[in-house]
Amino acid sequence: MTDLLLLPGDGIGPEVTAQARRVAEAVAPDLSIAEALFGGCSFDAHGTPLTDEVLAAAKAARAVLMGAVGGGGGQWAGAPRDKRPEAGLLNLRAGMEVYANLRPALCFPALADASTLKRHLVEGLDLMIVRELTGGIYFGSPRFIEDLPGGGRRAVDTQVYTTAEIERVARVAFQLARGRRNLVHSAEKSNVMDSGLLWRQVVTDLHAREFPDVRLEHILADNAAMQIVRDPRQFDVLVTDNLFGDILADAAAMLTGSLGMLPSAALGDAGRPGLYEPIHGSAPDIAGQGVANPLASILSLEMAFRWSLGRPEAADRILAAVIRALDNGARTRDLGGALTTVQMGDAVLAAL
Image (cartoon, rainbow, N blue to C red; front, side, top):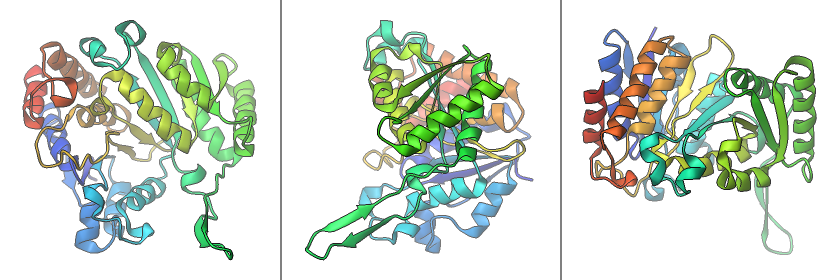
């Protein structure tokens, strides 16, 4: 069995993943690592962003570390929707049955002044967003674009959730909160959406049955967006659906100083491999320049060691090394510095 499968993908994905691999090899020389094509590069080579062979390899590995997919100045925009790189990512998540997306937003002390918010608002921030990952509007049907008889067109996307889908991701959030500050905010739009109303009812019932010791607060998703930039430290664990989680996690990313600092983990039931990835995307505007920040990828690796590979001591070493490198002044361009991608990798390796 492969311990760690790397799917570097497109854009800056291969650049940042290469630095994560260097760190993995340094902290765990015995780790078995494999690599495969995924995303746009896989479409170019095989006519599909996710081959059956790569999906099988991902399901057989203990953990999967992604780089990024898509971008490239729209070079895959003409591909059929089900063959675009982003479709490959959705199919990978669904195939691996990873339904809980953990997106931590940590403000490292050395980067408090790099945030778009004032230091007193973000210093000490430790927020965990738990996003439902395999349901909702990204997967619901029907979805289509049709021509209207009198001219013009109509587009339909469908938001769909079941009790079981909501319960399993909410359960992850409550369990995480028990090991943190014991507070969960559940975000939805129950005031205008039936799916949001069901979400609130199911989370409320689950809380009463299984987690009465955890404090639960309901919050409308639009208010959550405002509160994240008004007073982010009020949150401990924030659980929400696929669409709102996508948006709120990117907003939270800027609290930390840069999108290049945010890792993520996608987890399923116990015993299944986890999927780990930086959330910054393929960034085609800087791809190939060697200036991308690899810390989100390295921190995603840290999460893989902690959550899937069963090596918390290696995860602790990686996290401490990132903190030390930042304390020593290591900065890539997005953080106001001038280090290249490789030089930032060097700084973390030196800090190890």
